Each structure stands twice: as C-alpha cells, then as structure tokens.
Length: 585
Image (tube, rainbow, N blue to C red; front, side):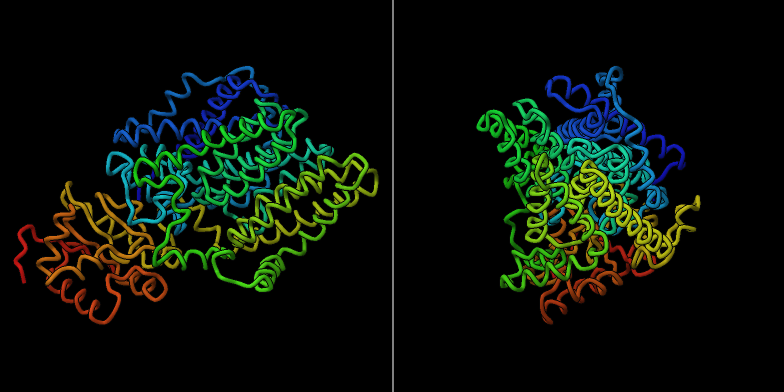
C-alpha cells in the first residue's frame, strides 16, 4: 500500500486545504457577493475545492494525468490564489476541530474503509495508472459525483495514502464552522453557535466518518454554506449565484446533495429581492458547481446525471442497502414505519433539538429561524425518500442544530432550551464517538506501521497486490470477486459489488475457454485476478459472480482450470495469465 511519513502527509493535507481556501477567496472576490465574516472561510474552502477539481478534471479528460503533473496542480493554483486580506476567522475552526478530534486517529491510520478502497481512493488510483479519466461503465461508482475523488488524486499522485482522509477531516471541521456561521445568521449568541459547530463532526450518524477518506464532509460544508448564503440579509443576484455554486459543488460530491440543491433553490427564490432573477442565478450557479459531475459523465458516458435513472441487476440491492424508500415499493404506512424505525435511535438528542428549534421559530422575530426550520423539515423529507442511512441525515441535523442554537436569543427560557438541547446532543455525540473508537481500537490506529489488523479488511488483497508487482508493466487485469482496486500496481478493471462481472457475458457467448480467453484478449486484458474468499463472501448477496446458474458455474470452473497455474497466489487471491495465442477448445 502506498504511503509517506505521517508528518509529511499531515502537513500536505493542511497545505492542500489552505490552497483550496485561498483559491476560493480569489473566486469569491470575482463574484463580489456580500458575505458575513464567519462564513468566508467555509465558502472559500468549498469554492476553492471546486476550482481545483475542475482543473484536475480537465487534465483527466485530456488523458494528461501524469503523477508529477497531478501533484503540481495545487502549486499552480497557489500561485494565483489570494493569500492576504481574506479576513478569515480562524477561531471558528476551534470548536469543530475539537468535535472532530475523536476521528483523528482514523485519519492517520492506513486506509481500511471498504468504500474508499473501492472508489473514494480506488477510482483516482485507477485513473492515475491509466494516465487519465476514462469510461468505466462496468463500475457503478465511476458514474458517482467525483469531486472528492478528484481532490484525493493529488496526494495519491505524490505517494500519500493517508492525506485524503486528513483532507476529509478538515472538510468536516469546515462544515462545523459553516453551521456556526448559520447559527449566528439566525441570531444565536456566540456560545450557542460554538456548541452547535462542535457537534457537527461528531453527530452519531457520522461518528468517526470525519476520519475516513470519503466525501461527506465536503458535501456538508457546501450545503451548510449554501443555506447560510440563501438566508443572508440580502439575497441579491451575486449571493444567489454563490449559493447555487456551493450547492452545485455539494452535488458534485454526493448524489444526496441534489435534493438539497432543490431546497436551496426554492429558498433563494423565496428570499430573493427579484425572485426570478435570483432563481436563474442560483440555477446557473448550480450548473457550474455541479459541472465536475455532469460534464465528466456527459463526455465519458453520454449520461450527464448518471447514476440517476440507471437500471441494472445490482441497482435494487443498492436501493435496499441505502434505504431509498421511494424505490422499495412501500405503502405510505410502510414508509412512515421505516422512517420511525430509522429516527428512533436518534430521539435522545433529536427531540430536545426539535423542541428548541420550535421555540426559536415562534413569532415575533423568528422569520429566518422559521425558514431554516422549514429547510430542515424539507431535508428530513428528502432523507426519507432518497436514503435513510443514518449519516445521510447529517445535513438536516446541521441545520436543526443552527436553528436550536438560535433559540438562545429568546431570553432565559430560550437560553435554557438551547443550552440543554445542545448539551444533550454533545453528550450523545461524545458517548457514541468514544464507544465507536473503542470498538475500532485506537491502539493500532496510532502505530507507525502500515499494517491493518486482520478482520478490518476482509479477505485482504493487499499482500497479493504487493506480489503483483512482478507482472509485466503493460499488464491489464480484470478483477473477479474483488471490487477493491486501490493499491494494485498495474492497470486494472474492478467492477463494484453492485455490478455484474463482465466475465459472465464473455463466458456465456463463448463456445469454450479458448474463445473466452481470446475475447478477453481483444478487450485488452492480459490477466484475471480472483479473490476466492471475497467472491464467496459477496456472491450470495451481490451480482459479482461470473455465472448466473449452475451451467454458468460449470463454464467458469472449466475456464479457470483451463488457465492452469496462477502466476501470483497469496492467501485467497490468485492471478492467472491469459495465454496470448489461446488454442480453441
């Protein structure tokens, strides 16, 4: 597994976050949108991350992803960034940084998060091996919003495997600062805004997620900053454009942010001085902000908003795992039951927050908190329809935290309500976070070695990946039963666990193993990699197997037997060479 000294990766992640913020400050100055002081840093970070991603995407689509060039992109942006006169309020980062501290041991650990090994890190790693961003329709995740993956490519190109997680940790800190700014916008006193900001990175649904190489933090920062911009004192054309850009950047990071973008658009129209013009400006901003997603998919797949609208054998499994209620064919009563069951574990802190938010929304003088509370309700509805995974509730909870904090402006009763609600939330966050950290085991996370304890990476492919350095430089390997491609030293194709193995169609269309081998050769493959342990683990619930019935299983076994002895074998992983001149059998 690639990696550099820990201190180098820590400093590199902080430097990349700083370059993103300074770049965003330059773009923000060009837009000339009025913005409150506490919101400048979150807005600049999101906008700068978007700008960096656009530059990296352009290089990727031009097939110019040389490691040295990708690693140099932030330096080019740093040269034109705005480093002085930004009037950032660094103190706003302190509270969310403390809230994210429990996740820091995970951020400095070797990558072990399954989703990251499949796509958060796996896809940019694949693109670096291929010299550019290419179409991979056999992998569902290759169509997902790529902004966080594009940013992860920079440290990966420099040989750093932990820096993407550390950059994600910083994005959660910035997201917390954005909630603090939103709370201040709604009238919360400083102490309440500080408490609300500190809870964001530690919310139970997102417990320790801040320390993983993922995309949630950047999406949250974009959503919270967009809502705060839309609720500004004046929502003119510039503010509407910036709010749309922020929501678009969030959409280019996670699909779930698309629903939130619609919420932001409606909020901009409601708040805009000239509603039609404000709505058009926000829509234009969203198109620009989401461009890393839809431009990439349009160029490579001809389907700009994929995977929305995609159908396939594994999509139903994805909907079920994600709790996408509108895709599960439930009755209205069934939807209510599912929502109640999903919300029940959060009642200990959600109920006090809701009560404090209700108090904050009462007249007189509660118009902005009322609008923000309606935004939270709309977000809850979107969560119920698009996926009831606990961590997807975080945007709603962040807005709710800000509204609850604003109750403190209503005299002693409001201060008590806000204080108790935020204290209850902080207590639950701390308890849950410590419990999860103890379950993970912080001792191995802080060791200087790059090894991960057995069990955290099921059917660990990394020893076999290391042995695969013996394969020819020009090798191109088709993975079977192994969705994780991060760290493999040669070009590869690794269908996700939700995708049908391309080998299935090849075997079904071939008269024998020789013809199947020839078909694979014509597709550019030189080897196949089989993780037998992972194939056995996944085949019962996912369409990863290269067979669909008993007859197909026999074809598969015949094919593997025909290939002969593996050229690499470590544990349950075998790599077989495809003979260049396969005899027809």
